[in-house]
Amino acid sequence: MRRALPGLLLILLSVVAAGTLAATPIPAGAQVEATPILAEPTVVTPLVTTVSRATDESASPTALSASATATPAASMRPDACEPNDTDAQPCALPLDAVSGPFTFVPEADRDVYVLDLPDDPAIQTVVTVRTTAGLDLFLTARQGVSLLASGTISLTLAPAIHGSVLLRVENRDPRPSAGESYRIEVRREITPRAAGTVDVTGAPDALENNWSFATAATIAVGVVYDLTLVCPEARPDACPGGDHDYLRVPVKAGVAYRIATFDLDPGVDTVVEVFWQHQDRPVAGNDDYAPGGLLSALTWVAPADGLADIRVAPRNGGLMPQLAEATHAAYRFVVAPVASELARKLEPTLRQQANIPTPTATVAPSTTGSSGATGATGSGSAAGSGSAAGAAVPGNQEQITAGPAIIVRATVLRHEPRSDSTALADLPAETRVAVRGPVRGLWVSIAADASILPGWVLWSDLRRIDPNAPSPQPSTAGAGGASAVPAETSAIQQPSASQSPVAVTTAAPGRLGMQVDVTTLDPALPSPPPAPAARVPVVIAVTIVATDHPPSGGSALGMSTPTPDMRQPVRGVRVQIANAFGEVLAEGLTDASGAVRLSRDLRPTEALQVVIPAWGLTIPLASGQTSLILTVPEARS
Image: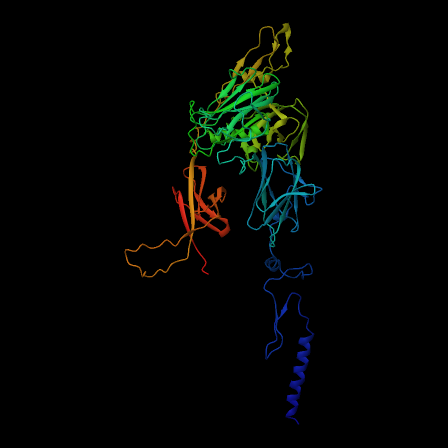
């Protein structure tokens, strides 16, 4: 009995210990593993735990910081457009500018923006987003209850879409968006030539037969027309000097018009002439917009209200045009007011296609002086700090020449180049300001006396003024009628050796006061950039055939027996030619022989690749390669 007592005590102690373990609560966040075969359930503490507000304050700060996920405070702040998560409070985006960066705070945030698109039938709007790697964005454009477009990278809004358009941006990536951002680029560009607009089979354009002044086709201002130089008559020698297109357009007195041909097919060379009241002699005309170019462009001011006649003819010396291909003779034609958005968008296209280098803006050097006699109303300190402040402006920024300007209509000076930015001051009409130089889209940075800080206004609210124009200056008459010269003017008359020379002009004998003109020397212009390589017509021939893979071993036929051609052409396959960025340059379907020829004007060094969307194939072309034969396996029955 005494020997059994210690064993009984051990059994009782084991039961008490098991009850104590069972009564111990399992901490929150822990996971219970499967019960081992010869052991009790094991409690496993996770490696990473979230520190709650009920954490014991006695825990060390080091332990708390190690267990919590650190997130930068800056990435959790809302962007400048917030709150803009509903259609009732959208954020306005400027046109022809890059806006951002924008964020998604909180995680379920959805951003809504508004675009105010002008009504222009020849210009489309392209919206592109650029994101960091941790976002998966989806864009939708709506006007009222109508869905206009949707996509993940970019949207293209047709020229017919104008007015207020709501743009919604949503993040579909399930990962946290902390530290991620995106930017939105809105560009207005001329609508490219649509496929099928011009018949490539050699048929005349839609305005034919307009071969004389009597049969001239009436066109509209501000519309891009797709025309051809194909003779409308099928009989032989119907157009010995080539097709001549006669057009009639209504104009208004005093309005300057930009008249141009562009997007010429290879071998097309045009001459444009304008006739007014007399049909025997033109009042204006242009053959080549630039030496060595082929397109034509001119600016003409209408002398009165009426109809102007325009003739577009091939520049071929009275002979039939010698084109790269007889079936391609297309060109585009437009008449647009110089002050219109279409004319401004057209100018870079004309310069690029005519191989004219883009002019480089010259920034006038800032002058620091105590007088501020440059004609700007801003103080000397504000004008002197223009370069430093302008360099700190983020975004897609350009530079223009600084100088005095005047407000042509009442506007608001904004702290940033956005219509919803903080208002610094109200600027009534006829207010003199100083253009500082930086430009963001359609916004110009200026300095004004009404605000101690420089700000931004729209370009349409400004007009430059001549800094050398005479302006009345107050003067006081001393004893005997002698004029007293202010101290600031006297200081300008004696420039120091470190200052730039100034030109001092005294007033006429009969006037009081003194007129001081300060002339700033222009900096040396940089050497012009090299002219871009001219585009040349490139034709790529692609042939697709199928084969049943004949045996690769020795043939039973003799050496003198030719091997039969087991290849069969594949018809109706869509083939595309794309550049290195994946942009489709030309496309077509293979014919009965399995071949297709694709042509496009390209630069000699541009990399190309053949894309077959239906099969998911992308085949890069070597430099100078103009043909490709693609053999695909044929399924055996």
